[in-house]
Image (tube, rainbow, N blue to C red; front, side, top):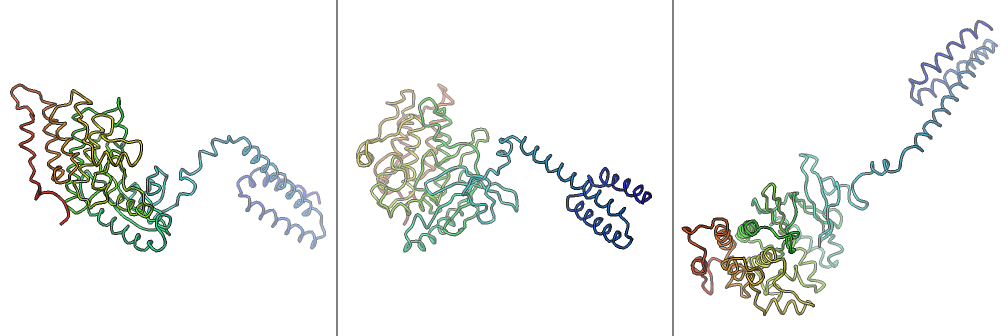
Length: 402
């Protein structure tokens, strides 16, 4: 019996001190159970208590080890601070889908008139995208849902054909249940809305160049038969460091209009809408140029050309009142620039700019005169301006639909 103890005790000590810490929990439990079974079987066959005692000693040691490890884990968990636990939570907001199509949703980055806007990632190529969503089932009645779905994908396809450096690119569109989505280029920077308040206005030459680029982008879109319908500072993204200008939400505005028509709400953003759009008449690209004129007015003055205490009063002023002169609000602005703004804000579409290229040319002419004052250089006078923009009552170059 003594010899058995001399063998058993060192084996048990070696197991507890060296072997057990190197085993996983399930390996340790399995080994312990096996030793107990073998020891009991040996005791039954040999009638000796030594193996049984060794097995019990091993079992007691392992039980103590398990209890100590459990207490250590409990103490460690109690000492872990709450903020660390919160910091490890995923950034995706509760309620946001995990995926839309093949895109993984990383976070919610905004809310638009259509619904949430998410930052997503294409796992195939690692590209970040902005995904705008529209809950079709919530926005449209059941009898209009099928038509709305067809229109959504038709508008997304049309907007997706626009390939211009100053227009946000649309990559993909899809549907998840009743949630329709459009995946588009993720644009860094900020929209122009922040530069429409007094004290935060852009330098005039910079504002003119941005609006000129938007006008050229609109001219391209109109030549492709696409009218934006909701041009405003919030729909123009600018990255001043990279020199990027991006017009957003082509195709999206038309779907938003369609959803709001059923409730009788005025379409678009009223303060930026043309008189014909407010009246519910057919619109073409010249309506977008009117909205761009309002945007330019606000970027130059920090105010809107027309405001009203009620929707009815605002609509009346847009339809009937002449636009204020920007020079009356900022006397240092050149007369030629006031003429550009006034022409863009004409009530009758046939009197406005025929297309965005014409508007961009005049804006750049004004900017050049501002940045290069020279007594030898010809000034941008009213006469010179009138020579560059002359219109017939029916302008053959305008972008109206046939």
